[in-house]
Image (cartoon, rainbow, N blue to C red; front, side, top):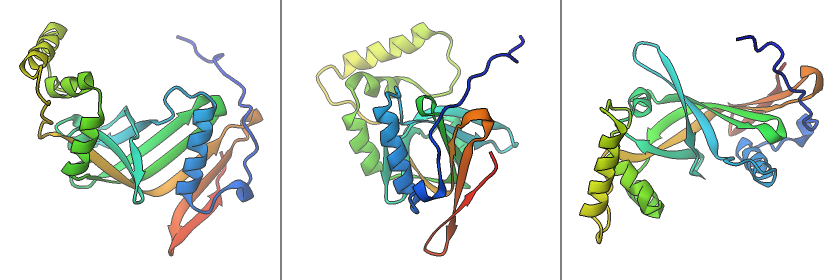
Length: 211
């Protein structure tokens, strides 16, 4: 499969150092809202990278559900592969790709479990069908066929038809506190603009990087 001719010219806006907010959280908010206005279908979709105990990396797309007290928050099953790989060390990487704006944002940081109270509040805000799916699925576990999964879903829907669904003990949130941000703006001729934020004292040091 030859993909050497699959390419697209990047026609993003110029990104100067003076255009950047000194606070990466504020810069992220600006880019996020611009992605919303540009029509990105899921501007909060982010690739999460983790590493297993044997050094094997894995990635998957999760949805950012909030930025609170310096942390990016997402929710998942704590029994899932990603949760087990986050483990005690908690080192993760995140990547946002906003294709319509020719932009990427890469983040590294440390993930810790969020409180059960916040997880419960978010769980209750989800559509009932999504709550049922979280209960029916043991995320990442081997299952014989789809019919088995759908059967679990229907059984739970019938069992709790007139009652509030319980949140299972292994479902909750993670809070990722970034220690590096890289804002990447695609430009013509592959001469992209790329800036890195690193902690410095009580603020952040911003450097331009070669693309």
